[in-house]
Amino acid sequence: MFRINRKTVASAAAALTLAATGVLAGTGSAAADGVYDTCTSGRACIWFAQGVYAGKVWVFEGCGYHTLNDKFKWAEAHGNPFKIFYNNGSTDTVNRWQARSLDGVNVANHVEIYC
Image 1 (cartoon, one colour):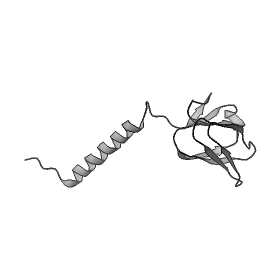
Image 2 (tube, rainbow, N blue to C red; image 1 turned 45 degrees about the horizontal axis):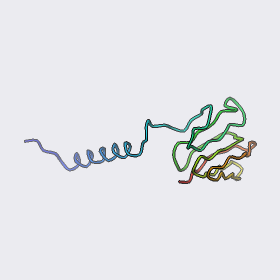
Image 3 (tube, rainbow, N blue to C red; image 1 turned 135 degrees about the vertical axis):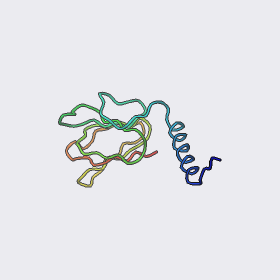
Image 4 (cartoon, rainbow, N blue to C red; image 1 turned 90 degrees about the vertical axis):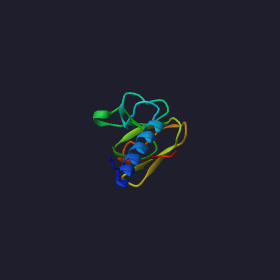
């Protein structure tokens, strides 16, 4: 007779829960933060100030904490507000549906998107 132990049942239940959560949370293909030519509608975006990516856009996917390490000159919040934190301790806040210039001199180390 085939026997299933509790550990196997718990593992299978956890895997099904993760799979269902991923399907329900997604509205299409999964996407990650990344560098693009334009800001995607409905996303938080910041424009690089200099270097190889000057003029390109960092598009954030999802709420919460996002790590950065570069200089940025412009931001747009297409929905949720966010705050940019710089290495020197200063911050810039971008309110809902706002576009604004940023501190393009200091290096940004992370962004928090509030949902």
